Image (tube, rainbow, N blue to C red; front, side, top):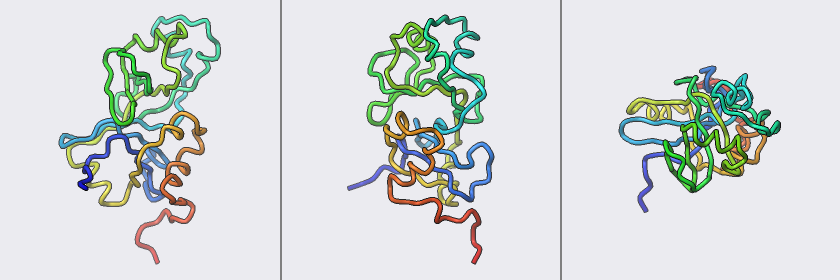
Length: 187
């Protein structure tokens, strides 16, 4: 069996030694990965925004206070003013990238308007910004053991509390991160 060298639909779990503040203790879902680079969304980092604020900025009204109170995540350090909706809804929303096992990322206003009307995806995460890697950059970081790559798990994405996702993602392949040091090469 030949395994793909691409990691679409995998979590990148930041190893304890990863010092970059954008990704420390982060879990990034890879949505795209090929010879030209990679794109993913951090799925365990809160932003300072709630969905209601984002909808107001876009002039989208909602009568659902629970929807307005949903957290918006920091998807990564690239284009932090751009919104991404990660979901598993099969409908065509336009501006949608489908990947993995029924996952999709949509950037259109249409999906947010549908959510505001109560007609959006049942399960979703909203992020501002994304994580991006140029050609070969992610492979280099993986070779340096900055990341642990594991198959994505939708239960972790949509059902696990944010603060538990880093450890839960590693546990999905039997790794306990508390046993890993945050130093490299020390005896």
